[in-house]
Amino acid sequence: MFRSSLLTLSFLALATASLAFAQEAKKDEAKKDDGEWIQLFNGKNLDGWTPKIRYHELGENWNDTFRVEDGLLKVGYDKYDKFNETFGHLFYKESFSYYVLRVEYRFVGKQCEGGPGWAIRNSGAMIHGEKPETMTKDQDFPASIEVQLLGGNGKDPRTTANLCTPGTNVVMKGELITRHCTNSTSKTYHGEDWVTVEITVRGNQVIQHKIDGASVLTYNEPQLDERDAHAKDLIAKAGNKMLSGGTISLQSESHPVEFRKVELKKLAVE
Image (cartoon, rainbow, N blue to C red; front, top):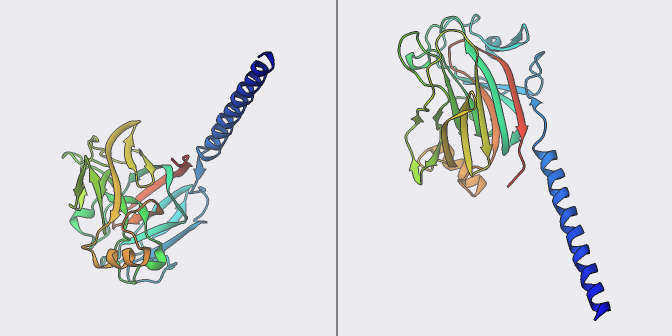
């Protein structure tokens, strides 16, 4: 009986030690994944980024649209005669799935001549996007989830950190949302003040937009839109319409915009 009790105690001690070890290992792994902020924009140049501008080849930075000046990533149109619907995107080299993306942006100056009215003080950070290599030469936007970045006109309300869905759909409160854009609950940001937007992305589970630490929009199940011809081709190649990760890109939509920070923190996969 005494020997049996010793064996039982030894087993319990071993099991407790194993559990504690497993918990510590899990914590260490979480720390590894849920780590430090990675600076996607290094403040010096466009290393790690590739432009794709409509009607131009991948990698061609048409009219120096994307440039780094004074430590800022700038989207400018001073070398354009007219915009001519040359919507552009600057793609980061890696794809991501579970992460927090933080961007600090502001709109400056006047819109490029020929830009559409809706694009005044309008840009975006695209997430869960397709690779730029799969875009056609005349394609305007990558199939992606757009965190729409907007500025006010000085008098009218206009939210930012909205959602737009080029070639995609999402689910909100159990309902498939097929409209192109959905407004957030943010306040309006007029003038040229810096605005910080944070996007928490957990694969295909949930995406949340935040400003000043407060949630302004939440949705889940991002997916390619079967009604869109290009998205339909992507679905056929992937064998699945659901999006659990993808590229990150910044837009050029005809109004000058500046980014002073584009950083990312990886999250533990759940």
